[in-house]
Length: 325
Ligand SMILES: CC(C)(COP(=O)(O)OP(=O)(O)OC[C@H]1O[C@@H](n2cnc3c(N)ncnc32)[C@H](O)[C@@H]1OP(=O)(O)O)[C@@H](O)C(=O)NCCC(=O)NCCS
Image 1: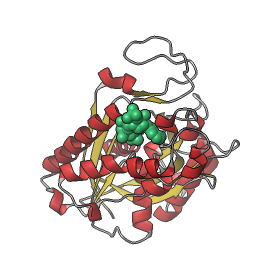
Image 2: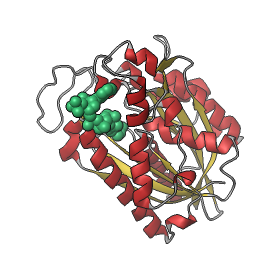
Image 3: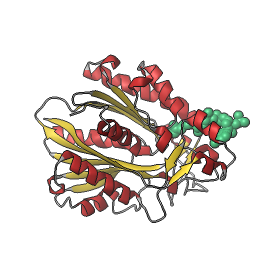
């Protein structure tokens, strides 16, 4: 049994934050943001727009694209670290609102690689013969947990959601190999404690738990190496080389991280899907947002070999090699 991605959808809120808007909030300038991070615009959910709203809209589009009804879903997994509630899960809210009456539901907290982790989990359930149709969502409203007085983080992040339907098939292909890696000893370089939060590693109470904290240049160095290593690992495991890959779909955190990763993996930038300019870093949503664009505008065709790679808080990272159906 193989697990194939059979449908995809995405949603971003209408509201935007431009670099000019950020110039009015913190000591920064548009040129610095564009050259140092590659971002022009990021989307921002309104006060009454939440992760579950974004996740539901992306999921409805994914189901329609897949041509399957919500009642056929066995499981809903939502990768998010900016959920509206701690319980119930965002996945439970999606399950109810899309009408996935027979599905179980839970959230998965793995920060930016969350969507890769979710699809990897779905793949394992399907290969084990446990489920046939699984909805995997990456959805975030990062702008609700960003400190807009901290120029080191507020210029980077945006809101969005992407969702895929992963289904069982006897046809060879679909998800070929995945890798998940981690190093919790570096957890204090990028974290968001949440309201009752604690600082990772030192385990001290955090003085400003409601906001994301990041030592950007430290994260940068680790991100490039970890993503490139993970990419090579899944290629080796599946017996492919990077020349076989049609597109690398990296986590969109910073254009310079994307370029450095592509260089290390030895893939030209023409074969890297990049949309960071218009969305910034939407955490677990970046890869499905880029994949959705590539599929819907026709760059990605049936049979294409695709390589997703991501890195984020934890540190956690991962890669997934898959064939588009
Ligand atoms: C945050 C990030 C854009 C900063 O870029 P950088 O090139 O690493 O910049 P540095 O932090 O080394 O700072 C360089 C200088 O720019 C300044 N600077 C930082 N943010 C700035 C901003 N928004 N506007 C203007 N100047 C800024 C710094 O104060 C520093 O000034 P100094 O040299 O006078 O001390 C970058 O490190 C990054 O994208 N990091 C990783 C993000 C990521 O991958 N997140 C995890 C995945 S979710």
